[in-house]
Amino acid sequence: MFGAEVARTEGRVDAGQPGARAIRECAMKFNLLNRMATPAPAPAPALGTMAAADDAPTRKAQAYAQARTTTDWYLEQALEFERSKQQERIDSRELAWKISRVSTAIGVGCLIGSICLVLLKRPSPPVLIRTNDTTGVTDVIDVARSGSVSFGEMQDRADLRHYVEMRESYDWETIQDMYDAVSLMSGPRERERYQALYNLPNAPQKALKDQFRIIARGGPVMFVGSTAQVFFSKKLISVNPTVPPKTEYWVATVAYTHDNIPEKRSELEIDPTGFRVMSYTVDRDWTRSSDNGAGTPTVSTPTAAASTRSDGGTQ
Image 1 (cartoon, rainbow, N blue to C red):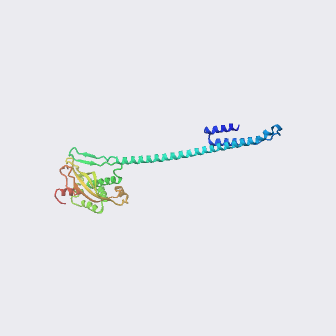
Image 2 (image 1 turned 30 degrees about the vertical axis):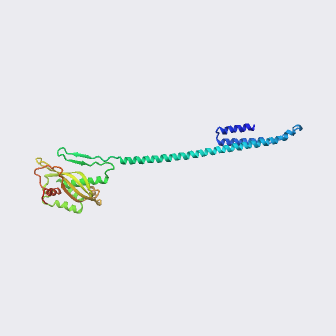
Image 3 (image 1 turned 180 degrees about the vertical axis):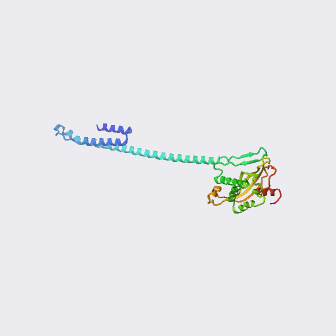
């Protein structure tokens, strides 16, 4: 009977039964064997059975010892099975972490490589070239794109064009506003030069009055070191429709800086960035042909002075 119980327990352990359950069954079998091995009180044997009764305790003790040895062996096997399963789980977890680390390193390397390739293979900003069908003159149109031109540079380009257009334009109705704005955006020395033009005998307000207008249009802006060159055109328009307009092309060389932001609200609306022109000169753009207008007066402006120098005269 003991051998049959042990055989059934061994079969369940070998079949992969969980170790904890096998341990509990072994403990139950061990208690059962203890109870069965304990001799129960019995009536006094007959004389004919005395010899057989003397051998019974010995056989029971041997069976008990054998059952205990077998139970200890199965208990040790169950514990070893539990230890092997625990070690297997630990090894599996360590392997999973190693694979995860390697995969993460490969992913990060691929991401860095992709970023480097994108930066290296990024195309250059496109360049637009405009051609005048009449004169054949070509000029480059600035193209701004994300990452190629900073916001500060774009603001400087806008301020330079705005300054040149206000300084070179003339309109009888807005002359005072332009005069104040140019004076505000000019440095001390350049402000004196600009204001002195309006005190000459052939100043714009004296020569043009309300009979002519000058419309200046800023073009491409090129930076040369700490200065900038602004290409612009000037069109002299008469209120008399019989007088044809005259267009000239010039290049302004401007040295500028950024001073303190104006404190007055009226000045802040005109110059919110503290843009200051420290030096301003103009030269004729000989790459473009000018229109020849008839009956245009001579005006004292920086461009008029440059035109006089180019013709060989002095101002």
